[in-house]
Amino acid sequence: MAPPPHAPRASPPPPLHRVGAALTVLALTGAACAYVALVDPHVPGHYPPCPVRALTGLHCPGCGGLRSVHALTHGSPLVALRANALVVLGGAALLAAYLTHAVRGAPSRWPRAPRRATLLRATGLIITVFTVLRNLPLGAALAP
Image (cartoon, rainbow, N blue to C red; front, side, top):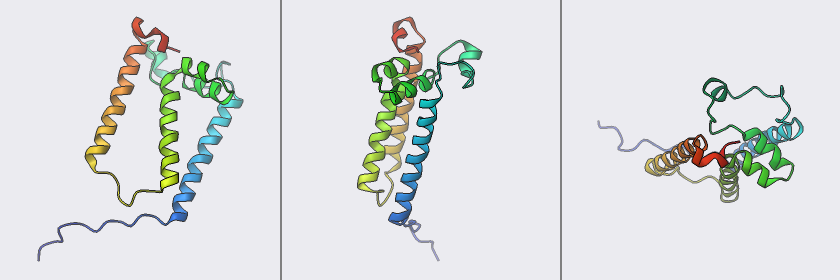
């Protein structure tokens, strides 16, 4: 007897679970942002230093991210962009994806692998280019 040509797909979680998961993500993100809003990253000693910066002297893609979130939570988007543009723009993209997911609901089936792989490659390329640029004299404006 030959096995079935396709394995059965797992059914999506009930809507209540989707809402609970979305609200959990929202609550945890809000709590993290509230903490960064209250505990100023400009004051030394509250957060550990960036290990990449400490070991190599280079700015990693996350350097300035806490200062960026702090500025956003205090209503200073231009200061946030100056601290780390990738965090601001990436956060906006994630927020848009989150809202789209919350409004439309989870897809009945996940996107095909090539679309996910393309998205991951594009994201990796953007992060790599941002990191290289912010460590060159040409991209000094991107450094925190």
